[in-house]
Length: 464
Image (tube, rainbow, N blue to C red; front, top):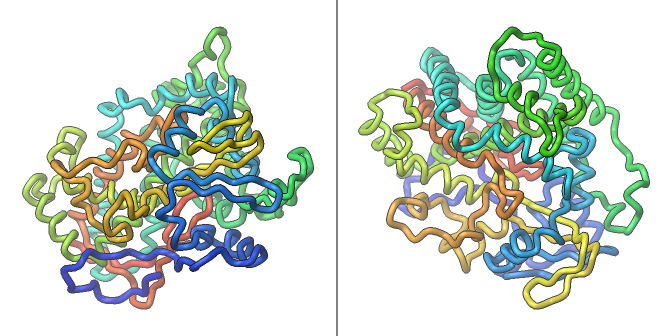
């Protein structure tokens, strides 16, 4: 936890906030209470340096893979056995996403991925990057015009920015700013309300047994579905003019081996997946980066020097990104410390074997980038913000030691788009203004569906 104060003046690397780590696992009741509030706080300090953890929790066997070797065993070598999302993960996302890509597995997952993957393929970057620069430039102009010291919620601002980018790139203008803002607000509420622990499944209760879902949770889902259903109706019924968008391309795609498109419910589920993946994760990365830079004057000065020398006040396009190695390093180190999705959970649908030990069908197999990215055996000074780890010439981390976009067959298809978006936005906004943490503000890493700096990030804008 970090209390807002003047940035430190020491030359030691800045250590951003993380939850306190217990010496050992607390009693089961306290463990469940902690997990429901913020499951990042349940891991004892010693867990971070373990290669693998086998544990019995209630009536489930848990396996935590925390080394490049065990991650590869689980998510690459034995993908067929460990491809299914865990019951808790499915319970958390199914009310919102139905059978969308984040939740589905097997033949359905393969069918949908073939339709959805081209939407964010790296080959699309040249056509998408100008819209990213446009949206970032518009917000930068707004910040430049603000009176010095204007208070903002930087987390909300980044959410609205990335939603605008999604509208300009994936959904086209048909979604509209008001509708996009409605989805952003409803998804934030959904995250705050949804229960990700699913104790019932850990007790061995059958999946068909209904779980309680609160009225506010159902209302937030309805808000999102209403907006996206309207968008889809406009596209599939020929409304919205002839404007091209990647979501329209997806609507026109055909399921492999057939001459039919996805039905409307499937289309809605995948549209929400795209919106959630495309706005929420990048917004969190940008919010964390802006916070860190407000507290780490040495890194901020290096970034400012690179931007001044390379861009001279201009917003970057795709062509300039290779000329911004420190900007990229800041983004990558931010994702190391605060991976957008900090826990990747699977359920074994067949027996497997990890680190020489049998893994029974029904076991929960976890890969936690939150742990992996802070494993002291893989990362010196693992809690410190050290962008030099990702600078040209530095030793690259092992392939499965750094997985902010997951790994294996279920790796995020939009990872190159997300990295480019974060770099363009950070470089553009940093040249427009400096953000200062509001005095007395408390910033805490909180994991729900994604890893956020709390519910809000109160900062003040000082135009450059």
